[in-house]
Image 1: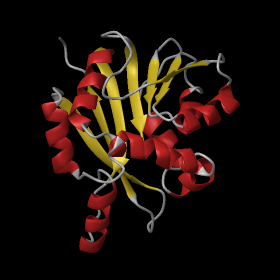
Image 2 (image 1 turned 60 degrees about the vertical axis):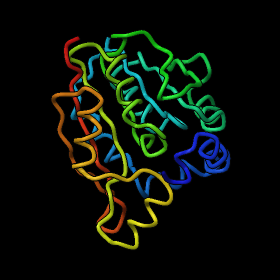
Image 3 (image 1 turned 90 degrees about the vertical axis):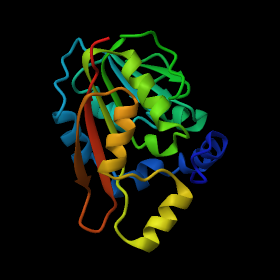
Image 4 (image 1 turned 45 degrees about the vertical axis):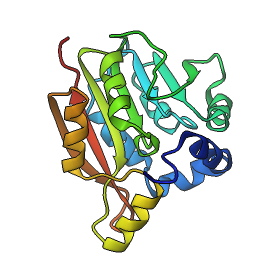
Length: 207
């Protein structure tokens, strides 16, 4: 387990990263990648969307262009404080401080469950993916964006020491163990020299 796959360490990390997150993030996960991922979803204006690990609200901004029924969840109060500055505490987004492994929502609540740049910090990703499946309505879509496992051996060792990086085979295992039957993976990349993202689009099965 990487050093940042610890919830307390991750909160401390984001206490400082939140100050510069919106300036650094576009080098790894930019608007074009975000909007491309959103285009793979059929979001209607009445759809209820959960943004897990919403952070400062980068993905939330894109999702709001399609529906105003957005719920944002993050464990970092510092990231959420930045999101409040953008959207207000009682604006169009309903924010919750919480844990991806114990989502504070009822079964079958959401039409879309989205998470970008969060799974790499989950100590128990399969548990969190089961939670995504639980709160999604049968037939709804779960979209998860995480860091693709590097090809270089040196970078692999560095990645393993920091947080969760995974390839398509590992993604297959996690989503299958979480109870998903239909899913596909797509690779996204900001530039030829930037880290690759692995984006999984899964369908919530019938109960």
